[in-house]
Image (tube, rainbow, N blue to C red):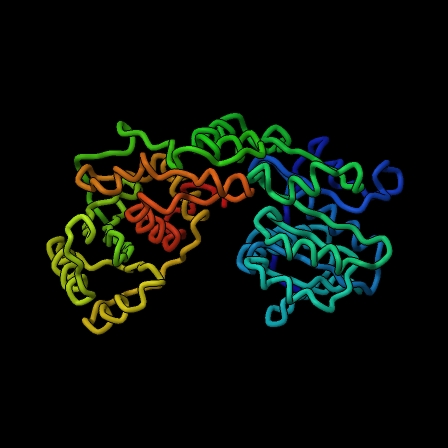
Length: 420
C-alpha cells in the first residue's frame, strides 16, 4: 500500500462519461475491442481512461494480468501510476506496488508496467498473456510495441485502452486504427479543451498562447496535421531577442560538436526574472574557415571562451556522439560534463513551449542561433512517411540549445505544462 494522496473528483463531461462506461453491458459498444481517446492536451482524457480502465478490469476479471505502458518508465510513473494510485486511494481500493519488479497487485489481478521507447521494447512483452492493456501517449510508441501488445491481450473479453495527443496524419495509429475504427470495432473519442470541465477560460487561453503552428493545431485544436515549414515559427524578434540581460542566478552550457559541420558552444542562464536566456555563443565552421580544428584546439577554445564570462556552469550538456571531444575535455579537467539527452522531438516541443510562454529569450549577439531559428525546417519527405524529422542542416546551435532544455526540465517545469 502506498501513501498516495486522495484524488479530488470533479464533474465529468459527457465525453469523459462515455470513456468511463463504454464497456458496460448497457453500452452499444460493450462488445467492441478497443477505445482510443485522442485530442488536445489537458482535455481530461487521462483521468477518464484510468478510472474506466480500473473499473472495467476489476469488475470483469479475477486472477488475470494486464499491461500498463507509457513512452518510458519515468513517464508511466508520473502520468499513469501517480493518478492511478490516487484514484484507488479515494475509492478505498487496496493495492501493492512492487517497484523493483515493476508490477502492481490490485485485488487478485496483476498489472505489469512497461516503457515503450524503442523498437526493442516489444521484446519484454513476449510470453505474457493479458486480459487487457492501457497505453498512455500511444502515438509515441513504436508500431511494433502496439502490435505486440494487441497480440498479448488474448484472454476472452480482453480490451485495449489507448490515449494520445495527435501526431502526423500518416501515423500508423491514425491510418490503421482511427481511420478504420468502425470495421475494427474500435471506439474513437476525440477530446478538446471543452471536454475538461475543470479548466477555466483563462487557463484555456493561457494554453492557447503557449503554442503556434503545428503544435497549436495538435495540442490545442487536437488535429492530426503534418509538421511542415519552419519549426520555430512562433519565434518573434520583438518578443524573443534582447539587448540587455538581467542578473543571472545559474548557468549551463550546451555543446554540439562537428568535424565537417560547425561546432557550437551555447551559454544559457537563468535570469532573476525567471526566464531562460541564451547569453552567448561560440561557433566555428571548419568548412567556411577552410581550416579544421583538433579536439585539443576545441577544448582550449572552450576554456578560453568560458573564462571570459568568469562563471562556472552548473552542467555542460554535450552531444553524446562526440566521444573523442568528450575524452579531451575530461583530459583537460573540464568539470560537470553530462551526456545530453538527444531526443529531438522532446527538445523541440520544450523549446517551442518556452518560446510560446515568453520564457526563453536570445541575446542579439548569438547570430548563429538567431539565423537557425528562422531556417530550421521540417523534412517534407519524412512527413510523407508519417514522421516528424527536421532537415539535418541549419541545426547546430539549435541542437546545443535543445541539449540544455532536455537537461534542465526541473528548472522550468512549473512555468509550463509539458506537452511532450
